[in-house]
Image (cartoon, rainbow over the protein chains, first blue to last red):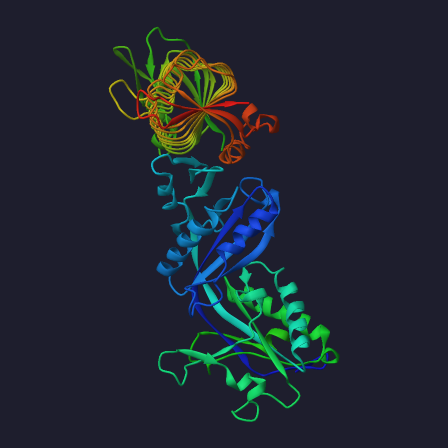
Length: 298
Length: 270
């Protein structure tokens, strides 16, 4: 399959089941909601070492948030429910509770309930106040700038992590420009996050390593500087490869995000140095969810 | 199906216990069975059809017409469905109700919504003392749900209240929110003496500065983030509480009752 001169490989992205949750952070203005959200989703690029994958889903208008203030919707993904709950609580406590003027609300009404502000309330040292409003419990925790308001719980749902595609280009700036265009479009899709810095990862990994201590290492088949010394997957003109990883609530959400992302890359086309779109998989051994690129773009 | 309607034929001298006439008791009964139910009135038992003309068939929607202040225990322990009362009610309106909706076009007597668990109760007129309170000797009053009173409320509103919201568009009597364990009482009008007397936790949200006892301490003026959410939860009510002009988040906060646990608060609109 070739779109605007860009070759779409007959391969698939391999994804695996995860647990996910969503929270809504509001603040006095969008600037401070975003600061808090960025802190909460910082160091959350990969479950390999961060414990979770997190990202900003979208900015919310004041009319969309529970307290009528500007907000940001964030999502966190982890391999299991326990890990997710732990990450959520730690991050909420250190990054949102501490952030000036912030408030924290559930972003998923259904699902298994996990603690959001439920345990943060103990920071109130006995001065905290519970309010049950329309069946939802909120905690009012006195803090130095006034009160930190946090909903007691949010929902945890089954989700999918590790959807991806690779952008192969003739130069590093061209690969990055294509990925930036893709991310801009993908951020408009609900229920997905692209957890890596700016949504783009330049160090895609393969499973395993020559070093026993590591369970992941550089994806040498896609490293352009190794073209002459490893079983490369790159043709001579490819000088740079970047990957976009997508976590989403459902298979459809991820497929939709991949489609708009790949389309944005293809819109730049071969004239802008983008030559191929591929995807990372492990021969179907790692995850049960397979996103075939050509099917998605058909 | 039209609403199951009980129209009072005459006003008995003695008070009447209306507790059998709730939706979940009547839903599987035929009209003749409902007519044959008996209601305690003083020392007598009166057949339902002796007191009421019965029409309609939908037991999930009950209407009581020509009601007056001696019909007690209307909607007792109601579990789903709705009861509309045209006229006044006696004491213990919605006593221990668990879910569903009760609307009264007139006034209600003592102990309305006493030990209410959940649901919605609306009184267009005034209510007597001990709205949403606990029975004498009991430690737990209203435990959930929403009460809206469009008129005035008597003394001891929310005595021993545990959870839920009481909204009063008019005035509240003395000892409003006395011995509250938690929950929210909002009063648009004036409050009597000793608001929040011996309250442990909970919120009194007042539109007018009350005459507070010395055991409430001023915590200053604040903008509280939970208030817009609280007001948003009143949006669907047919009430002044639902009006956009009613919404505020700037309050003077008083903590108390310091002679008790002292974790309660009186918030006064600024």
